[in-house]
Length: 103
Image (cartoon, rainbow, N blue to C red; front, side, top):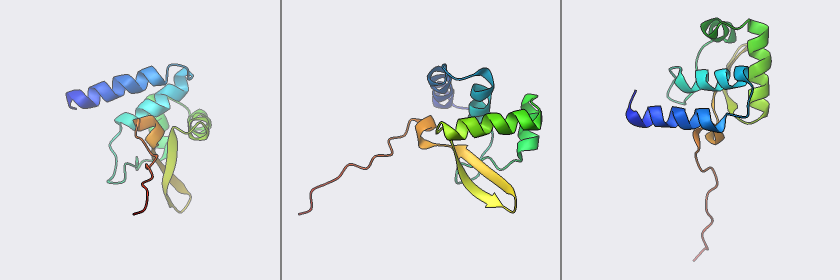
């Protein structure tokens, strides 16, 4: 992990300060877990829950709250398994494209 990555994770901890402990844990798990090329964490909810010591139902409920608040977004679905990644909001990316006047 580079110094820039550490700084981004510290900033993510700061901006999630108003969230519950479980919500912050889910956000940080998605921030720190290995991802595919699209930025998705390709792991089942049960495995992620076990990784952080949460029951699967609590993890799923908490992840749903985090999704609804805009911190995670679905990237892919394989049968009944959904994969998520941090949203641009969580990454601090500017998702608004400035308009230019046509010439």
